[in-house]
Amino acid sequence: MNYRHIYHAGNFADVLKHAVLARLIRYAQQKEGAFRVLDTHAGIGLYDLTSEEAQKTGEWQEGIGRLIDAELPEAAAALLEPYLSAVRELNPEGGVRRYPGSPKLARMLFRPQDRLSAIELHPEDFSALSRVFEGDFQVRVTELDGWLTLGAHLPPKEKRGIILVDPPFEKPDDYEQLVDGLAKAYRRFSTGTYCLWYPMKKGAPIADFHEALKALEIKKMLCTELTVKSDRETTGLNGSGLIIVNPPYTLKDELHTLLPVLKEKLGQDRYASQRAFWLRGEN
Image (cartoon, rainbow, N blue to C red):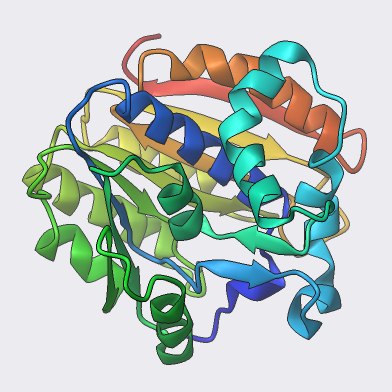
């Protein structure tokens, strides 16, 4: 309840998460039928990077600030186009003053038949999120603990869905809660595409987290990680990862194209690294 994403909006972790989310949405749109995005920890939807909070950390300058005007290889530019075009649409004057959170990005990429359920527990953030989507019949905003939605809101009535779980990781058991939440959700909606975000920092139990996920025996789980600096001299975030359950068959190859470019553009020291691999499935 204390976490406020405005301090971190547009940072390198957001870049990875939102680039992948945009790819998942574009893949889902290859079929005509409607689908729903369920964003369990939605935040405020739209961020002012000139605000006092965003300026206090300046994290966006090491993330979207480096990427928005960068020269990119043609293949990577094509894959990033949906995400970067949405950011540019919000900033017609150039640069990056406004940045879309996950729910706003998803909504900007939607067709008329696609739907969004945006969940937020923090009262002030819920109010801000509601204002962003006021009057939008394609979006339902709910004030609720996002973990509860993994049972209550699944399966979606559209029978097709992308479930983004991006918790604040304020508590030491959040990695375990992410595993438990996925297990509960998958039992209810085994055909959904799940995208689970997690932080990487010194001492984080990443290996144990991966082993716990493997033990769920879900058939297809793809992992991608991007670290931008060494964890030796920092107690903060040095990388982040995503677990994608039931990923598009094209996604691993797309990541092999994207990740080296993101590492080059966003890396902060020589220890920057990237990888994409199967936790379970098509090795």
